[in-house]
Length: 236
Image 1 (cartoon, rainbow, N blue to C red):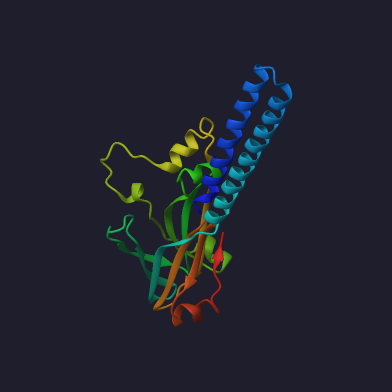
Image 2 (image 1 turned 90 degrees about the vertical axis):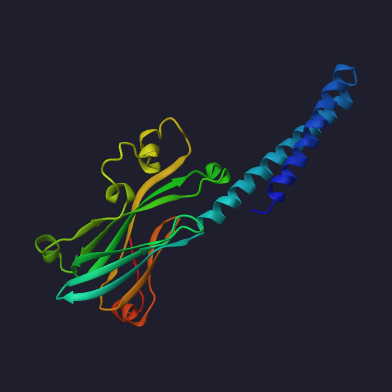
């Protein structure tokens, strides 16, 4: 965010406080007209500073709502009829942290990846609390409703606390904490789940991006583009 969104309101607000204090002091000394003018002027400057600060808050919120980043790459390899192997590669959490790569067998015609999203209110965004997410699960999906109901299903956990060591007695989850204490801390805007699905094909490669509104999947090679018939991406 541009620095003057906060510097300008701070300067104007300080000037307003100085004028207001001077006006009050003048009234106490019997100079009522001068004190009234100074008080009204100071109050006006303070109101203008408040409006500018709120505008800066709103602008920063919109900037964050349009920001997105890649969270996973999904590659599929066909092993049989409606049976694939999906490789899910996730980037590291830190600047130099290594990424992860895991293989998952999937039944069906399409893969679906889901995430849990924790969205903060604009004033919490200003304090540096960006939208939080975690990839939750990967599953196979059939185009046929009948197969979706009766055929072999495949679902795999992606969340760290589901695939991590079972012996760890304590786990801190932003999602669970925000949901549990939401009534006491008015910083959470919404908690929701989102997902994206795309067709599986031999050699297809997709990128999955997280945005403030959920997950978006995009084909990145010819096999994926051909399978997705022009590059559609389903988001829910």
